[in-house]
Image (tube, rainbow, N blue to C red; front, side):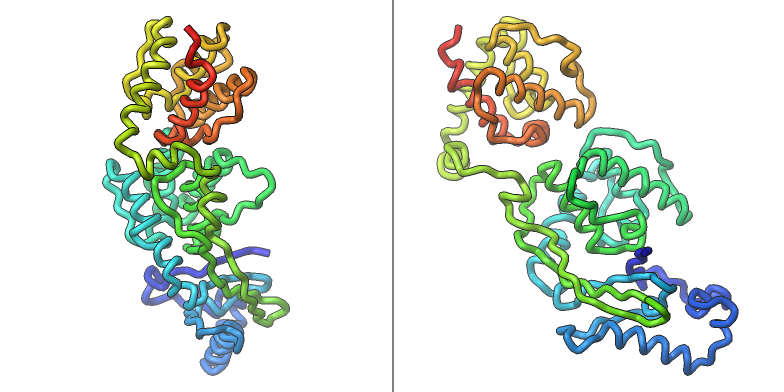
Length: 367
């Protein structure tokens, strides 16, 4: 079954040629001969199928969106969901739009409306390239629908490879993103924000009611589906039980410099043996190289250079290095770090401190 989400009325042409009319889409030459009253009846049928009595509020549907091909499906967000404060917070400038604009500030790209600005793949391409520190092999500017979908295909394939979903099916597609399906776009952005540990607070338990309209055997059928966009912060961002570093950041930030100084002294005592020195914990461990070398020094072995990237130049390579360092820690009898490799790569200071403090606890007396 194909999926063709709602198209925004903002970009509909004011006039359409006869062979491109709504009826032409439905039935070719026969449909074009239908009388005006039959056209009106068909449009009304589409609206009535969506505006069921169980629907808490009427759903305004453009006439074009109620005329479907056989087995075609379209979706629209229930107005009551759009009015939910948490949904508004997620969509509007305070969260996702602000985050995108912050990431792309150097590109001089300003996103104002997710559906209108992300559907053609241009902004999504720049966003992914910036987040993952990569370069996608796509045309810079594409005006045709085919070109836009080709770009989207490349971008979404890169996202899928990055996220590597194992069991959970993807909740977006080329057609849904290009069709300006806001729910699909939100699913994609939330997944990217979670993966890259975006420095934003995603509102918890955001769900939307979606009206799905399908055409089967010439009749329109509608149903209501609940789409869960966010869960809890712990589940989304992989947070663990609160520890001393949560308390330190929340209640004793003045002592943070003391902790950082102690850890810098500890790591430099060992890294100096390789003529290396750390001055900034936030940035110098982000690519994983110093972590790998430090583990070799602490456990007194040489780490073969082919096991990690000595000069990583992409997000994936940096994540590989940090993940490899975590494996070395486990081999050394340490507990699994209370952080994700992506957290360290994304310059999350609290996560980096947790990892280094884990080492400090075991090796602080090692000369």
